[in-house]
Amino acid sequence: MADTLTSAAAPSTETAAYAARIDHVSKAFGRPGAQQLVLDDIALDVRPGEFVCLLGASGCGKSTLLNLVAGLDEPSAGSITTPGGRPALMFQEHALFPWLTAGKNIELALRLRGVPREERRPEAERLLDLVRLGGAYSKRVHELSGGMRQRVALARALAQDSQLLLMDEPFAALDAITRDVLHDELTRIWSETDLSVLFVTHNVREAVRLAERVVLLSSRPGRINREWRIDIPQPRRIEDAAVADLSVEITEELRGEIRRHGQH
Amino acid sequence: MASTDTGTGSAAPQDAASQDAARPGTDAVPLAKAGVPAQRGAADLSGLEAGLDALETVTVERSPLGRLLVQKVLPPLTAVVLVLVVWQLASWGKVADPTKLPSPKDVGQALADRWRAGDLFTIIWTSVERGLLGFLAALAIGTPLGLVVARVRFVRAAIGPILSGLQSLPSVAWVPAAVIWLGINDSAMYAVILLGAVPSIANGLVSGIDQVPPLYLRAGRTIGATGVRGAWYVLLPAALPGYVAGLKQGWAFSWRSLMAAELIASSPDLGVGLGRYLENMREGSDMAGVVLGILLILFVGIAIDQIVFSPLERWVLRSRGLTARGQ
Image (cartoon, rainbow over all chains, first blue to last red):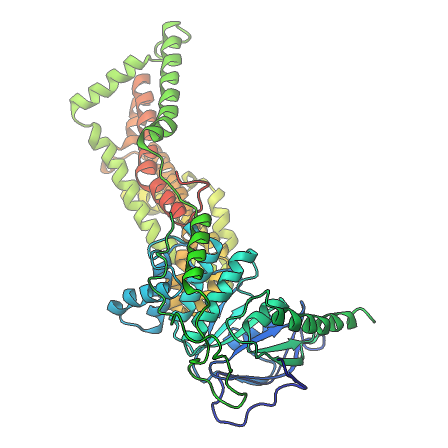
């Protein structure tokens, strides 16, 4: 069901056979001399159309890594290549602009991408339809529920027409039922498009529910610890026995990793 | 109000074989995920989603007109009537000499005199025109100044403290200087207005920009709003609430400093504005006229605030869901 890959992924030798290539990236923060290494020699390829979950406890630098891939920060060593241009990024908070309606939030992303004026509105409505918020075009952000806001945020991210979608714990602040529904939606949208997803979470079951590949990061510094390829057919449910079984295995590994930090 | 019309948009293949689940191999490059089966029960999911949306959506209703009148108009009206009653009683009871405490009727008479003389609106307009023009000039200067102070660290360190310090300096203190530099004319009036309003407007913008959540700027950068486009599409709209608060305060400062300047500076060139009218009445020991002058100044200040700035502020806050409830 889940065959375990032993070590860090060897970067693929095919040319541009990836949506993102993280090539031996390290990141340290702080002044020279008193530096703290946050990410240590991360090598990871996300293939086109692939759904990868980065899993790790707090302090593993998973959000830092995502910021690096998004181009919001520079790696201290190594390089990151995203052939499909600037990746789209979704945060834990919806980060929608409250002075714009749901539709206008999406249109702003289209406008900044250079979509001509007359095409923006139909495109924004198409994207809202895609996240099943067809009637929400002129809603203000504060009039939407948490789950609806994240769906608009997803539509805005899709409006960038990037091949790579980065998601930084986007459902962590939602209640369980809403999160479950959004898992289904994300799987549906991912399967209908040629989108590659790099999804950061600390929730093991969420990772197993969504991903084709789960990458476990160790903490302080963040290193790739282990990988699992997940062949459970989609759509999965978070309560499926197969999902639960693999989650137990990965959780055990994660706990071992966390325990290691208490031993010295 | 459910805002999702269920199932219209998604073009999900409804009945793709759900056993066709063999994921592409590790070396294959799956461009389109044709192998991924459709959602189990897509209708089921969209129904669930519509239900959740309906349950969690906050509907903001505007109050009906009747309640609006009772809640917003009745209380200030009551207060005004109460003040008039106490005033009338005090003047009937001869609490003070009528030359010191004119009755409401005397003040009404002064108002009617001005109306009949035909210069009531000329007096008001002289001041209001000056105040508004001065305010617009302050807007044109204060806005770029605030932007530069907020965004350029060196400028902020250099003049930031002076700018906030200027707010506590009563701008009437500038009147003597303005009169010596510019003479007793409109330029001196405008100089005093500017010195009063520019710091407020600039400081409002600075604090508005400081309070912009960094998340908006990050989100803006990821969708391509960098540099000037970032300032225009993200930073400025996000700073609008603080900016509008600064405008409101800027207007109050403009109006106050203008009245002080008109009271102090006297010249035929200046014409008679509200401040000058007030001072003329004092010189003639016409207490009813003085009270009328004070009331007119108060009235104009409140009116401009209620007509321009309060609606602007309410609109900005309400459209962002920042009011406690839909007012």
